[in-house]
Image 1 (cartoon, rainbow, N blue to C red):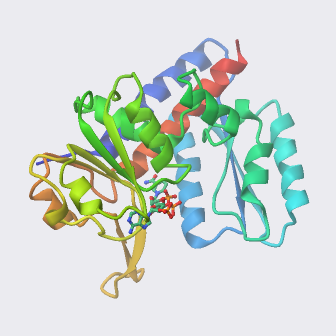
Image 2: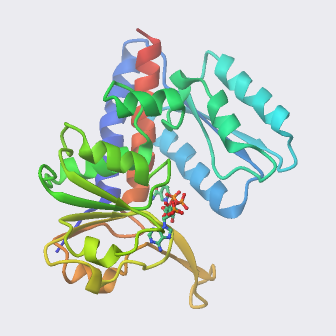
Amino acid sequence: MILLDGKKTANNIKDEIAIEVKKIKENGGRIPHLAALIVGADGASLTYVNSKVKACQRVGFNSTLVDLPIDLTEEQLLNEIELLNKDTEIDGYIVQLPLPKHIDEQKVLMAVDPLKDVDGFHPTNVGKMTLELPTFLPATPYGIIELLERYKIETSGKSVVVVGRSHIVGRPMSILLSQKRKAGNATVTLVHSRTTNLKEITLKADIIVVALGSAEFLTGDMVQEGVTIIDVGITRVKDDSRKNGYRLAGDVHFESVSKKAAYITPVPGGVGPMTIAMLLKNTLLACKMKGL
Ligand code: NDP
């Protein structure tokens, strides 16, 4: 079994980006600038956003954190988005999800300038991705594609099962893996909560991407020998033996599945760091596109 080391791979990508930033600086160019907008920061969301801001510092980007109160109205948030759209210093920004219930998430994501949408969630960018046109790929599926590529895992002609059909992970993942591209050309089955014979399907898969948000859902009896496993899930599970009172669990029961897998991502240290690295890659792209 080979561990797909997302942390190490993400660090390699960050090093590559840092070299590019250094070159930009040396040539007197403008440094990429990523902003992150968060509303009503709770513990988990703030941790995610802070790790994105820290990653910016590591590669030499400029970064801005826009931390807004939870009782902000939808109109006020849309005004903040408009400010970010107009700010010529900012190349790209993300809106940390989930947003408070009184705010329409779709409306907010639609308001993001597609040219600054480094999360790749805007319909314009989703459409471009689907049509295989150059655009910002959503960071988590993009990170998985990159991980598969860098570990030279063959996807062409393989049977891939994606568990979960969310707009940010499962759905774009299934689209990318089925496209005519490197780390593509797979025969993809997308399963979800209404799938009736899930185990029958996962047992036949060469590669399984698990993104449902249910701790240790995929167990060893659901996979075949030699499978490649990509575990996207991150769930906080109560653990009194830890100082903080919880541990992070993936969607895969690592102990039983890793015994059969040829390749597997750990949680933490797998898909998570790759997501952040690809966000930086998208920001660099946004900055370069602006300069064209
Ligand atoms: P969503 O809740 O948006 O989607 C979950 C999907 O899983 C839905 O399509 C749902 O089906 C499906 N599902 C739920 N239960 C089952 C089941 N029993 N069998 C089959 N399918 C099921 O989640 P996200 O995609 O946003 O996130 C998934 C996980 O990935 C979470 O743990 C999240 O924290 C993590 N995540 C990690 C990232 C990273 O960087 N590592 C980035 C983004 C997310 P249906 O559509 O029918 O409801």
